[in-house]
Image (cartoon, rainbow, N blue to C red; front, top):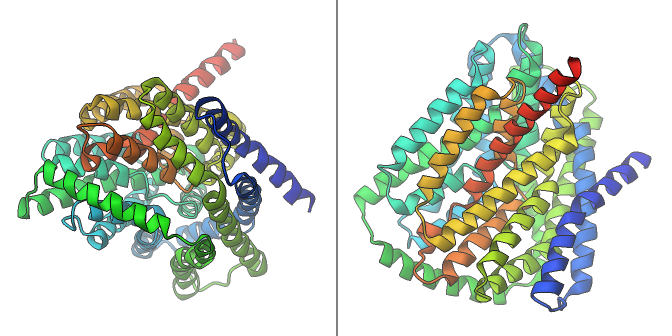
Length: 497
């Protein structure tokens, strides 16, 4: 009970920035008290409880079984089964990802079915399966991660110039929504466990990076998918805009008919999201490794806590944060004050990232494997600042109407330069930080802000301009985390003298 109360106290501390940001804009800027204030407060309490349960479940269930599987595969010495496991985990955890389903459905609606939601999800899931397999291969061979990542960025940029403009923002965002709250801890445990089991590998340098691969490859695969789709059936941006207006009207009508009790189905949804992952884990554990799970009762308790924690977390968000966050975003665009939009984007980016469960999980592991060189709170603050800067700049890009790929290419150049300057132990963690920032908390609010801006600013096409904020939120944390690593390394060397 003491451990849970400590986790709960920490969760309330993580949510405090979001509460302060929303309260400030609601009272000082919008100047209106929310009608459903009791529901919002209850939602925040439920979110805090969900976070506490989730973190405790990770420690009891997901981390141990992920690292145990990695160790057993390393001992088994079968490259085929290890690569198949990596692909299957990547595919199964992505295909049912709620954020990806939401983005795919929105893309299908905006494009009048030209972008098929099912095929888009299959494309992204296959790319993540390929990414995890490639990341595992890198750990086995001991190759430096930046060779792979830089090559991937070059491919992304090269394909961008051939991809239809309607698909670019969606492709960049697809890379940010693939890493879910359950996927990140499991994939991180797999990478760290594998690196810890192979002689000559460093868990801090070699164990991280799988999430970065999972964020990069969807950008390539989705752009290729878009090239094929739009080559078969070209469409003008004006036609896309007209379709988007109709989709927005339909969304509003559905929202007005929404029954609050429908959120009880979130529990079923969470179980459905976790079930394929558990099926893959236990199949490989018993059918391939042929070994019983150690401390199965603890693992089972941990998995149940993760499910209950995620359910409570989503329920609390639906009750408290999402409605008021989306309302403020639309109200700010109606006020025609660009600086307030940028400020809201910055503050909401920082506050939601600090409460992101995936980032909490990665920060805990980073501190553990780096033997204290990386402080978990400082790492989270560095990532949150990156997301805040990214969303603020992304909001400016939508307001200004500038092409997305110019900003992304410039950001990649900065990432590549910092890669050569940053200490080796921070680079894989920085790359992974870009993938863990866009998950359960951040994606819905950021997506709502981007589409809300594009829908309310004259001359903007939601399909072209509305997507892309998630890509900014994934890119800039890599820059700020490597900058933090460079500074920390400088201070350490200075103290040694």
